[in-house]
Image (cartoon, rainbow, N blue to C red; front, side, top):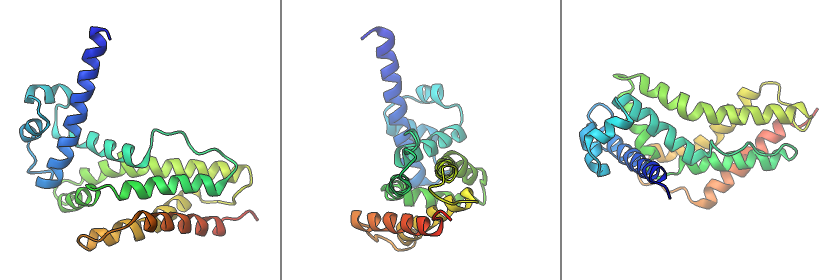
Amino acid sequence: MTLEEYQAQVAREKRAALLEAALVQFTEDGYSRASLDRIAKRAGISSATLYKHFQTKDQLFGAVTEKIWAEGASLDLPAPAIGDARAGLLQLAREYAAFLRRPLIVPFFRMIIAEVERAPELGQELYLRGKKPWLDRVTAYLAAEHEVGHLHVPDTAMAARQLAGMINDMVFWPRFLVKDLIVTDEDAERVAVEAVATLIARHAPM
């Protein structure tokens, strides 16, 4: 490993530790009270190092939002192959359900809802960096299946939101409202399978 490669690796590790620390700090303290200095201390890095990566709390929050969606919803993966709509949609549905079940997701969303009146840009960041890319991915997949005639989906954006809504209603919102409610692997799989079956039944080729 060259010196440049080693330095790049160290920088990546510090950035990853910083984002993980920021996620925990934001959920514990809320956005407005979270301190960049405390985040740096939790990550085990200096404040100067933090500012090399992120100059403002807004930038750091945006990166945290992007990180949790990318890891949970696999936004960096290629789209499912066209040809088996059930398998493709099930892959996307499972990714979304897995994201919603991550341990800090409910506290993170609670924090945003609590802060959004004072800082409406937080909700916008959550949507633009997180949910919108996943919705765009599902929309593009549905459009491709529609184009080849495997599904009939005149309004692909609406259908993508309906898929998300069916999963949200069973996997996310009950846990948001009921403390310590458990959604098991079996529960999440059943929700994903049923949501996809409903969508395919609604949009079967004419």
